[in-house]
Length: 182
Image (cartoon, rainbow, N blue to C red; front, side, top):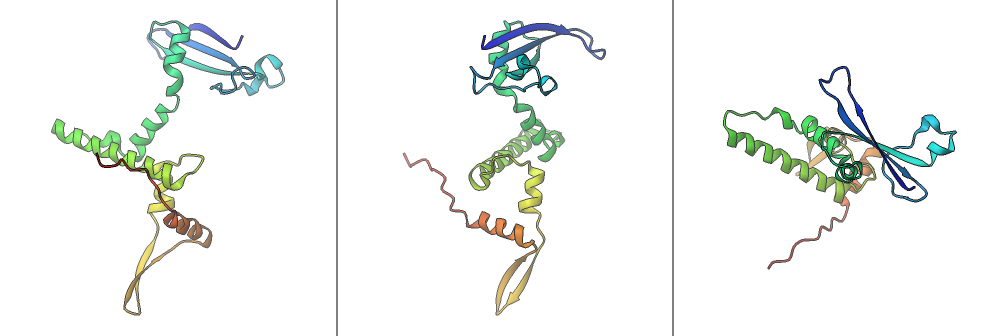
């Protein structure tokens, strides 16, 4: 069987009531793109090694297969929310006026989306870096101006290894498809 679902209930000592737990097991040889984790604790046991597992706590009263279909694409959403909260100060915009708060949150979301486009089209790295990492690698770089032969020159303080990466970043031919005028 390629997919198997198990439904359990669990109550932590800190919770007031039980919650539903849906556990999904996918056979890797049948479902090559199976999401979830392999259980390394049981690596020597054939039965566990050939499967990927995922678990979902929910209060939605649907069949386990429906819960899995609903939640399986959302695995990374929590990481994006954390990044917006910690790196972009999403939780620090509490203005007196509702519309001012809404405007601040829209600007934070816009900044996040612009950084996502920058990461996608310019950096093109396999792993997505957080804003705090990008701030260190790209934006928070020591520099000073110097006048040479009447021209103002910006001297950037980077080691040779980082300098090469930084220069390649600015020399990258950026081709973003634009929407033609209607």
